[in-house]
Length: 86
Image (cartoon, rainbow, N blue to C red; front, side):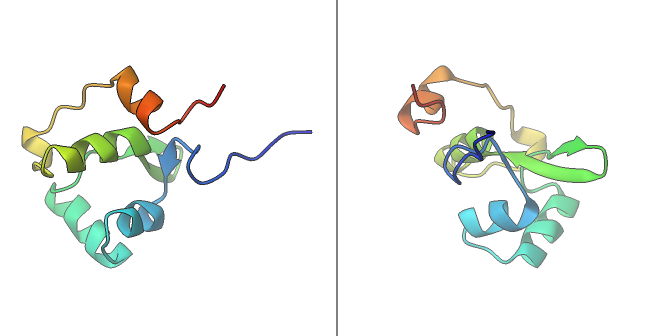
């Protein structure tokens, strides 16, 4: 049987999930995406997602604009937020 990860284990967030996680309406999030304010989404076929760990780090670094943002994946975020439970 395949287990579905709970919300805190999912690595990719939809527009709605990313928006609510950051405290804004999905329409605002889509506008910010179009203006290059939020991090670059991951596109899988026709679906658009944002990396959970990237958003956490982006917020902790005061939400810089996309052109100024460089995501540096860091194992500590996975450990702190228990993304990969043992």
